[in-house]
Length: 153
Image (cartoon, rainbow, N blue to C red; front, side, top):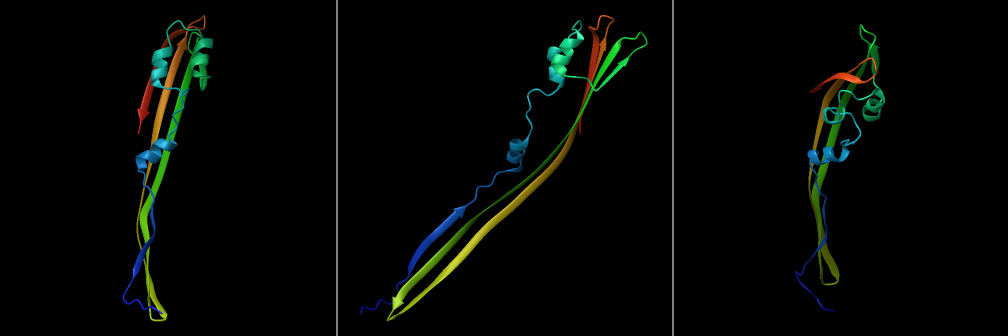
């Protein structure tokens, strides 16, 4: 029988890398980019003095509140509030397992070493937006004036 002294074979079994993505990337993945929602830009682009109330409903949907002024003309109010919550976590790391072994005489000698490095991170944010649109109609149910106010905090 042949004897091999002091020979160690090291085999790298696995290296696992888990990709890390940032909180900003997580937020972009969960953000609502709904095209049809009411915005200041939509009001500026599409609402015009002289437009009839049916077209306003087509563009903005039904108002939250309908009242009348002192001359019994309709006033529509759109009041929108949005709260955005975002939470993101990431984790990643590297793991390795190294095994060595060799034969000495009729016995075997060997050992294994395991190591790892990991990192975790996270972020959370909350924000609110409000949009109030007031549309005033004339006696023929056509837009005579409109105003809007937007805030973010």
